[in-house]
Length: 118
Image (cartoon, rainbow, N blue to C red):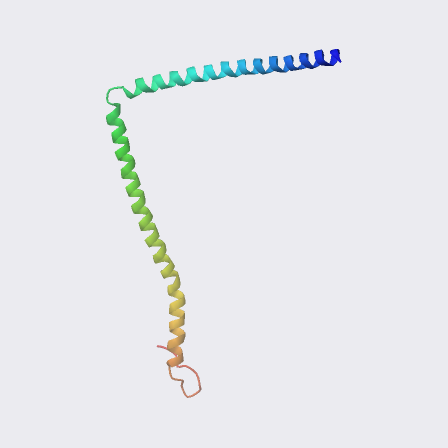
């Protein structure tokens, strides 16, 4: 019974040692990541304080807005063109139906045939 208790305590202590070792590695990794993020933040602050950068950013945003307006206008034009092409694709069918309709109203000649058009 004593051997079981000692073995169980050793197993628990090894498990705690392993957990502490993993937590230490995780802490180092988090510290390293936090330091890198702080460095990036510092570089970004320096970059944003560069002279003339705010004007360039503003010009870039205005350019993007112009491109978006042009894109939406082109989308509208494309939609109108697609609608026009749909209607145009129906034109041959309509002409064929109209031609059949006008033929049925023409008078037959003496032989029971439609007269030829000139």
